[in-house]
Image 1 (cartoon, rainbow, N blue to C red):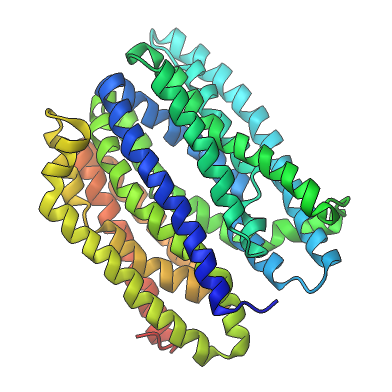
Image 2 (cartoon, rainbow, N blue to C red; image 1 turned 180 degrees about the vertical axis):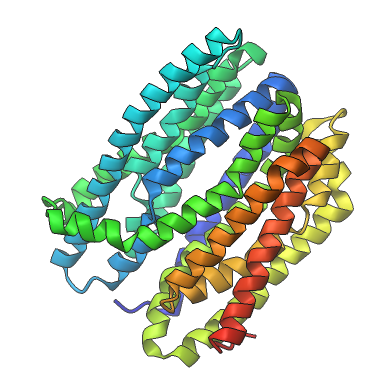
Length: 421
């Protein structure tokens, strides 16, 4: 399946439109939640979303990267159907398994917390857990593979817009924080259900019974990406979770407010990365030199744009925070400026890791580098968070992402002699 450059631009436009719409929704939603819920309840929400994030990583497994590639490279309808049925079955099996584990874990957590005179917020957990279901049923990877990403935009933005309206109507104070979590989490499952209905109407041929061999091969194919995704989750989500365990909801609230603004920039970056990945996969079929030339151009544009955003955040961090959250969030402004160039650092690892290493068959090395970053995070996070709180968590993120970007650059350019720059 060959991709034309015009199709690439269309896919980029679709993904950027999606992230742009999400950004605009976030411009309304994030300040509203911070102001209405207060820093404590907002911190509790951010903490529980971090806990639930582990479930989404398990459900994604590695199919967010192997799925688009395998669908794009399928040579017939029958092969496309085999890929789809195998992956969607794997995701549903994982979802059922971890849901059972979550039920047991929540029961134990409630019991243990009660015996210690504390409380585990099971309602907040299950309200947030709906997000895991969304990752299980929304086949974003399939739409990426067939290069029809506008469907992702339509369903995702529509569901998030409805969630925004519900939050504005019904979330009125700190006591409504569980309701806020519920509305935030239900958008992705709703989008997933709508997308499956569309697939039944337009792509009915993909719904076939999977074979055990296909399921086994899908699990094996995604293993390297899965292990690296777990490692990535360790040095991203674990920082927030550790912050909640070692400090309090207020500290998490200040850190969460700043990191969500950074996440808006990272979301736009991820859109470009998602759209370009299958294009590079097919470009590589034309030859390594052609792929490297395209990646080189993409790297400079991608990292350059992220660096420019970092300059804006560094210069206007206090003003940005005051506009979004109002007075009293100086700590968030400081953390935002401290993490200003985090997207630019991540841009380098995205290009060298995803666009180069995964497309060039260097999954093993990619996995080892990501795992080394996770180990570094686990070494640094507890002492730095205990010493500096949210600042320590931000410093850990900067250190780990810098390490990964430098090592990936060195491995690709120096060890493998794949000349990008």
